[in-house]
Amino acid sequence: AWQDSRYTVGVFVQANFGKRRNFTLRGQRVGPDLAEPAIREGTPRAEKGSIIAIVATDAPLLPHQMKRLARRVPLGIAMTGGYGYHSSGDIFLAFSTANPEAALAPSGRIAHADFVPDVDIDPFFDAVVQGVEEAILNALVANEDMTGRDGNFVPALPKAWLQARFPNQ
Image 1 (cartoon, rainbow, N blue to C red):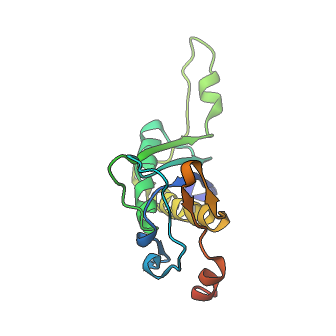
Image 2: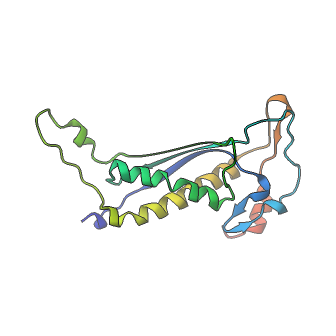
Image 3: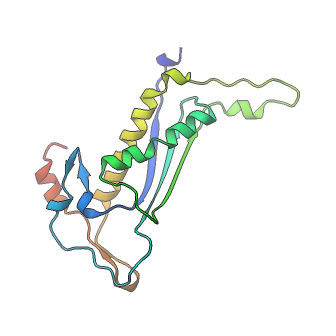
């Protein structure tokens, strides 16, 4: 039975999205409390960021199930205060490394693939939402102050402030 197996769901994000004032951590909106310096824009931009999320698993899921996992990515983004805005470039992909032998079946033979039944997919949805939230938080905590083209400046999250606000996290 598939329930006797352990599977991994991993998420990679390129997090360049959202508004600082909406930043939410562990269910608490902390964005308005973040100290300056504020973001400075040297040039007006039509776009306001983007996010790319890649969901990978070793669970035996079918293509339509992988599409369903990818559709759960925005729920994890929302957990961090990202809502999606006009001109945001969002790309969400999901894939499974399971069943590699199914694609290698010789010509003229029936190929077989294992898969988790649709009715049992909810734990994978949970894992995607939690994984996306965690991947975004990891990216934000690992960042540094950055000055980009035309003097655009984005400050890093104040790590000491976050540790004081969430001491056991």
